[in-house]
Length: 115
Image (tube, rainbow, N blue to C red; front, top):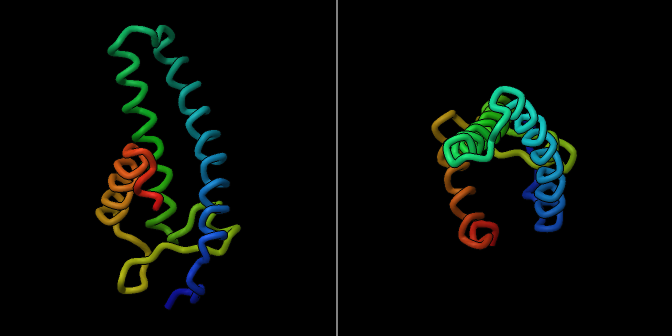
């Protein structure tokens, strides 16, 4: 049975979200730098679309890896927040994908998913 964590307060969730944004920005910056080394001229439409798809895939890989292996990203560990399935186990890859897709859609709709 995993360690029990109390329900996270809104303050802790927002602090974790802010810290997560900083960490994700660094991960995506490094991934973008790698992409521009491979595809040096990323100004035409196709390379830009590929860059966006690549960065989205990198973001999913980051979150899916963390959520399926213990239920915590680095920011979540610091703020003692864990995401678990209803059975109390870390998320499956399918659950992580659904969570990621819904989060991207929610953020894309003017942040309504954060509410």
